[in-house]
Length: 394
Image 1 (tube, rainbow, N blue to C red):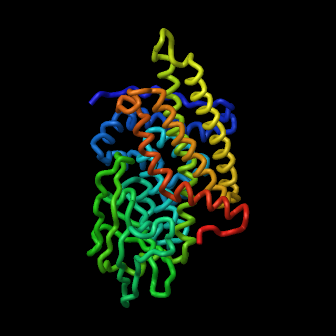
Image 2: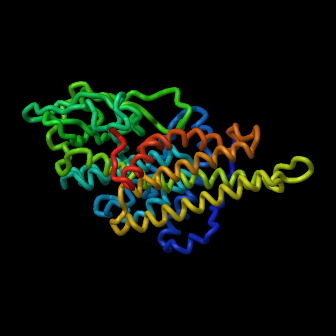
């Protein structure tokens, strides 16, 4: 395996670093250095083999990338949301699958346990998840219910001193290696409740999803529940209804809004370097108008997205960000990044489809990111409903 040197330099066309604190810049440097040292040299090889680099679990825990906004007393970083966004941006600059591992752990597993769990649940699970000793996953999407989670069939029934859980979830990041799953199921009253399921419970299995063309270095699987006995103390006591899972998705979507900018930055940086080195017709291709048009549009869209997520981060820190604002940022960043990967791929010509460069891997990964945590079209409808007051979902 050829060891590659990561020469990435972060574009900052509008001097947005001046809006970041010293702590933010330190966080970014630490995670960027980690990605350059531990992720960039290996990620193409893992993606080509469609294998999850399990060593990153402990590394991400040591870096503080799991639950950075969770209070220190539970093993988290006690950081603000801009720090969290910066972490996700740097991780996704390396690979969307690496960022997914951290996003799921922090926003979809640790957040609901911290926000809706009992004190005993927080003390039992959060420190182990924060350190990377345990990996977690989040069970909401089902084979027949993706954008319509309220139609879920996974159910939980009272059996005296415990509950019985039945059903199935799919497209679950981290599931093949997870020790803990936060699962959303309907109780006998039809209410959606959160359940903490642990590996080893009889009837609980996590089949791996194979043959993916996207997120190939990320572990994806199913969650299958066949009369699983769940102790009553494993129910999240402080939430009922779709508010629970949707509040988790808001946190994850915020991370994606930042993260996908990292993928776009990496493709822009790669295309810019290539345009200065690749000679055709006697001069570097960066000197031709069409190539400059592509690069100028890339840096413009990256800059606009940077401004949007920075402002969103300020609103998150102040507790004022709305779900619809987060939704807009997620959709915008995903579309922007997907477009940039395609333009960068064209600029690299035939080399753009090889593992010599990161562009095609980012391009394939983003096809998943633009779909999960709310599809491109669903986010448009969320914005549409927010500005008109009319529900177009049904």
